[in-house]
Amino acid sequence: MPSSVPPPLQTIRDLCAAHHAYRAHTLNLIASENVMSPWVEQAIDPGLGHRYGDYRGTDPTARKYTGNRHITALDLAARDALQKLFQCRHADLRPLSGHVAGIAVLMACCQPGDLVLELDGPGGGHRLARKLNEAPLCPLKVESIPLDPAAYNIDVDRTVALIRERRPRVVILGSSLFLFAHPIRPLADALNAYGGILQFDASHVLGLIAGGAYPNPLKEGAHVITSSTHKTFAGPQGGVLLADDTALFHRIAPAIYPAIVTNHHLHRLPALAAVAAEWQAFGREHVAAVVANARALGAALAAEDLPVIGAKVGYTDTHTILIASPEAAAVGDRLEAADILATPVGLPAELGGGCLRFGVQEITRRGFTAAEAPAVARLVAAAWRGERPAAEISTQVGALVARWQDWRFTWPLPA
Image (cartoon, rainbow, N blue to C red):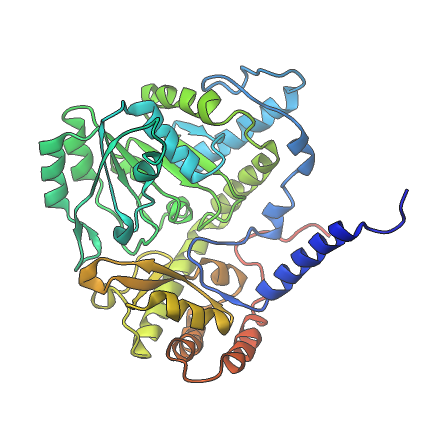
């Protein structure tokens, strides 16, 4: 056997090491990313990644493969942990992403040509139906949910009127640009009048829901929640589908398996159970800190004369802060050159057409507090305006993030 690592593999290892070293010195304000705690990360089991755990319908004991007696128990335990945390009757952990979970609802509940209402890009929608329409096999009519730009939220009256007039099969709420909770009850009532379905994409706020800082959509009238599991929820990458409606849950299951997912990547299930336990113990404290830090950073950025969206109404009720800029991509490049990571995204024309999206969930987990918001805001503002050399700002960024080496809202690993 060769005694040294083959050169191609060494190159891959070097690239991974370089990435981790680089990211350790950046100020990561990407609202769609997070880090698992060491306690959750150690629960990922690579050995389970060699195995198949397919099951039919909604019954994890109805296995296709043999040799699954312990995997079945694991599937059930992880499922039960999510159901307890989100106070719902049903959870399906097989979707491999929030996108897969969301597409499964449309594939199960829509016929070709059905109307689906969802938020468009400037409204922060994940555009599940529009993306599905890229495949000619799945033609849908897709229209945008009316938005109130001033409140940067759904225009309830116009949306209810549109539902009553057009009778869409599915309405998809949820956003990648969440600032404030979406109204659910009046839309759900309008859909219930004829059997329409309200799907809530919780990918960005699942952790906030788990910690009680965002209203549980199922309790507000949503028929089904679809979500990723790695943003504010800080679990492994993957997806989940949650519901109380038993008939709807059974209706969606065949679109997940076998239509979209067969092998559902078993190695992540122990970590899903672990993050659910972590949220049961620390979730309320965790998300309260996230929201408080986001509001503090929003105020500090506004104090630096940056055009923060929602300044008149408290900036945000979530982990997200939006700063308007018609040149968002160029500003994002300046921030990245200074090792500050954020995401350029679109906004309605009434709000300037573009913005930088920031999130505080990762830095909050590592030790950032509201008291440090002015220091972060000064660095962001300096990079935003190009006031100082990027390398100089980067040095200060590195010194700042070096202080955040704690793992908050979790248990220590055993010695």
